[in-house]
Length: 176
Ligand SMILES: Cc1cc2nc3c(=O)[nH]c(=O)nc-3n(C[C@H](O)[C@H](O)[C@H](O)COP(=O)(O)O)c2cc1C
Image 1 (cartoon, rainbow, N blue to C red):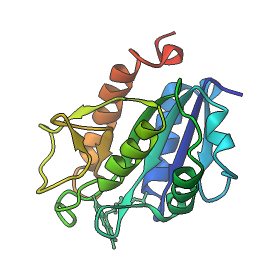
Image 2: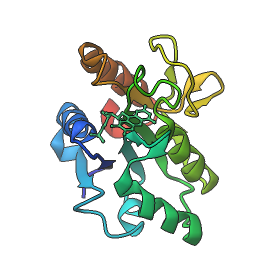
Image 3: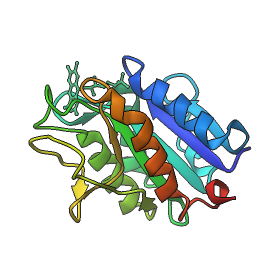
Image 4: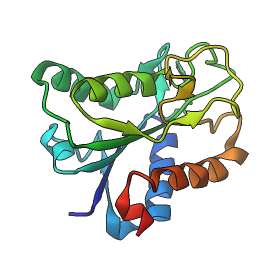
């Protein structure tokens, strides 16, 4: 088992492609990849890792991507202990077409895993983004990394690189 578990949910393949890019950047030897649709059984899969990267796009009006819905419901009911876990969040959204609910899924994941004891890391400045509203902001920052392949795909590569630098402070495997 690798040091980091990267779990993603993706409907049209955008977050999936980003997850694969992130894993490639990090190194496949230190990062296991799980599709929430195809590879995930239950929250024990998450609990196997001390270091987690969770990817979730936003659908509906600020809702989590479909493959995360049932897992998050189970987790809410069963309340497994995530204390001692370090979690970083990323996800695709659309800052113009859905700028009133921009990357809201990240806020949902943040609140749920934080309530179960996880340390959520990798907050990102809102300055580089144009949007109307987002429920993914805490203390003036996004709780994770928003990526917008609809309007700003040219910024994705640099945003990922900057974010992975930030994560080095909390993910020892990335700093090694
Ligand atoms: C019906 C629909 C609803 C959407 N709702 C939101 C939303 O509330 N917030 C947001 O930031 N993006 C929203 N989006 C944009 C998607 O998150 C975006 O297209 C993303 O790249 C999809 O990623 P995925 O293929 O990994 O699921 C929506 C897109 C569609 C088609």
